Amino acid sequence: MKITTLFAALFLFVTASMNAQEISNHALGLRLGDSDGFGAEISYQKAIGSSNRAEFDLGWRDSRHFDAFKLTGVYQWVRPLDGDFNWYYGVGGGLGSVDFDHPDPDFDDDNDGLFVFAAGNIGIEYNFDIPLLLSLDFRPELGLVGYDGFDNDFDFDIALGIRYQF
Image (tube, rainbow, N blue to C red; front, side):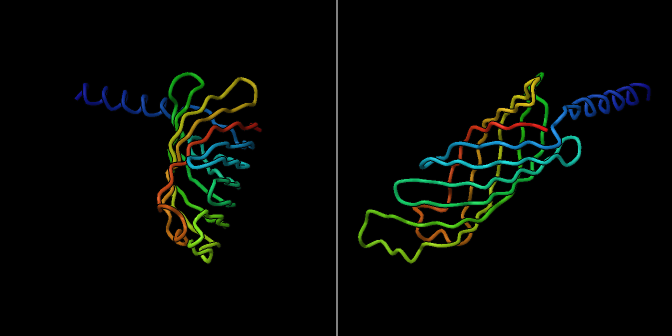
């Protein structure tokens, strides 16, 4: 019985210490990158509790075949990795507007317009002693509505983030 109590107390201590990282209440910055062209997003993060946050990104995508604006929202769980390094994962989605400039003259430009997608998110971040946060993340996106003109309904969005914390 004493060993069971000891293991239970140890488990609770380890679980509590795993969630002991400190995330900023607010962070504002840029998220740069994309899988099929250049993308830039204005990124805002808002803490929800001690280890969760919401991230909202308003961005622009540019590739050889289209230009798009998109709004993304992701709910994230943040976990400590080592020292000031954290890793995080999350789920969300978004919507956007696309304007195709396809080189194929037979391409139907009626596919321009609104699209909706679901997204996952996984990444790593470094929290500096100054109010600066650097991150590298992977956001797979699955097209739900309005992806008729895209080459596929699945996108691998990889980006570098730099944010000011306040």
